[in-house]
Length: 223
Image 1 (cartoon, rainbow, N blue to C red):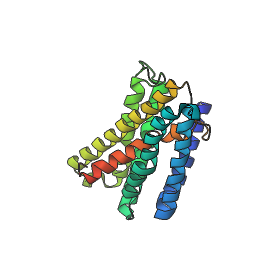
Image 2: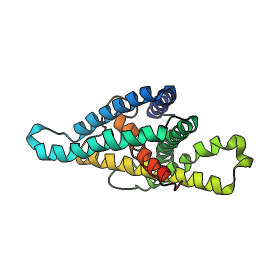
Image 3: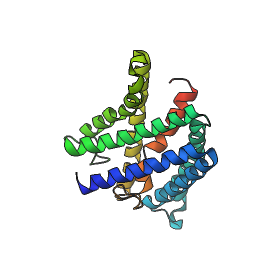
């Protein structure tokens, strides 16, 4: 195990424990943390785009959509998806696990198998890594249903797996979107707050797009 991978694993475990505790304690505490996370991501977004007062129009075009998305769309969907019931909290944690597993699978498969590059947007992304993301994203649902595997119908299992794959796809697209802006501005990481990951936005770039997507799928009763 490389030093970088070890850092990523340790950081991921710590973040996951903190996230689960904050999700589970109460809504107010969770809302506060969610807003803090949005603020950090917003600041990091401004830094990677190198905004300044000399380019007011560019700054507004870059900042305004990010502000609306992070502080309105993301916050609303996050609070709504978390809800106040035990079932909604468990569901939210499962979505979080899917995103983490998707990211981990991409990193592990990309490092071990390597191979053809996925896109020029992010040179480190490979096709094998993308497949690894899809494969690993299914693990949380399989593990969650393991204790009652015989009681889960094929239809329900298929729907759950489809949800995992959609979440993984959105996570990967979100990762590529942030990578595009980092590459455009010649920036390697959005920050240095997380060892092995870079900035907070580097770590949750997929999650911030997955949550609103899952919320839309849920309210439209597609899943």
